[in-house]
Image (cartoon, rainbow, N blue to C red; front, side, top):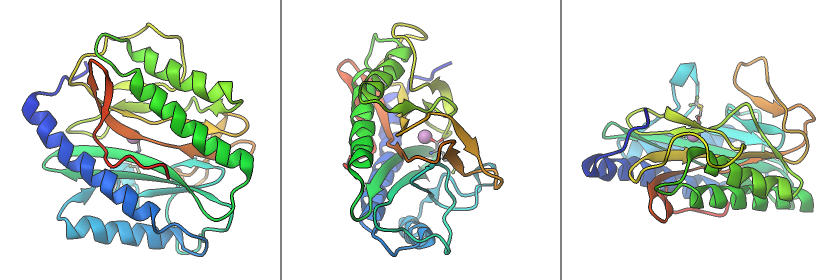
Amino acid sequence: MIHVKTASELRRMRVPCALTGELRAYVAGLVRPGVSTKELDDAAAAWIAERGVKSAFLGYNGYPAHICVSINDVVVHGIPSAHEIVQDGDIVSIDFGIVADGFVGDCATTVPAGEVAPRTRELCRVTRASLVAGIAAAKDGGHLTDIGHAVQTVAEAAGFGVVRDYCGHGIGRKMHEDPSILNYGRPGHGPVLKSGMVLAIEPMITQGTYKVEVMDDGWTVRTRDRLPAAHYENTVVVTPSGGEILTVPDIAG
Ligand code: MF3
Ligand code: CO
């Protein structure tokens, strides 16, 4: 069952979504060679606390930090660490979730640190373009799988891989609601999208193989070939003209 938000629920959803968008812009601005991923988490934790809201990730299935920081071949769910230092040439994927007034916002971006290899820069650009295409497909009267089809078409046209093991999701009072939003597939299938559905669309795109594996910490997801991956995410509301981004500002990373 995909929930269609009421006008009042949508008004409330805008608050955590805009907060995650602002937090994303703030933390992305702190990424530079030499910063530890723990410093990024500490900065996010302080920012969140100042606003009297909560991280949606801390304690989620036992997750131990406020944000996820995933460098290079780490696709998603990297756990911040004081021992992990951002290096020149890294790409740093950061995922943010905030709960406010009983509703959740969720967004992510991939930030380059220093001089990133051309093909890896291209990976970031194309991943973001695939998200833009997925959001455009999130329109009233369309089908759920139109979104993943749009993402996959953009990513594969550029020779990149689409992660199969993780996907986007509906979002609202809970971080993960129906439906699951695959980043691949044939168009024109699944439920019909309706204005007022709120979706977290999040392509995870790889430079090489799309196959991934979870490390022994139970969280860190890496590409099997250890080539880089990028991750962009916005929470959007379905409208007649496509997804309206709630996690503003939407930044290029
Ligand atoms: N933002 C991620 C998602 O969309 C969730 C991060 S996992 C957590 O599924 F454990 F850190 F919460
Ligand atoms: Co998400």
